[in-house]
Image 1: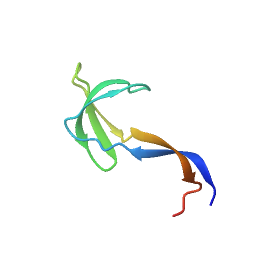
Image 2: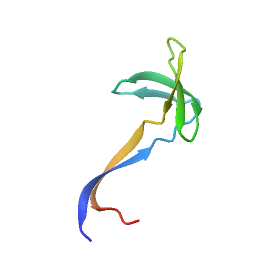
Image 3: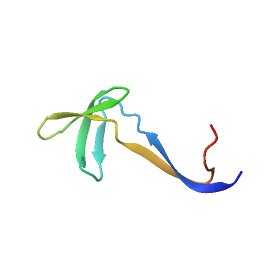
Image 4: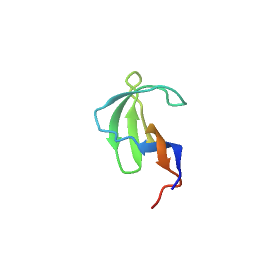
Length: 73
């Protein structure tokens, strides 16, 4: 099987109580994780204390230089 350079995305495993910084995008800035479910994450702004619930959107990425493509199931 041939290999390709493949970018791999994994859903970030948020934990309640985490202090996070989102580096870019429309939600950039400092946040505190105050709720986590299978599909949603609730973040609180440390300045205004407002809370927002969003579909989980952060991902860890890595790049694999010799990964099978397409991935076998």
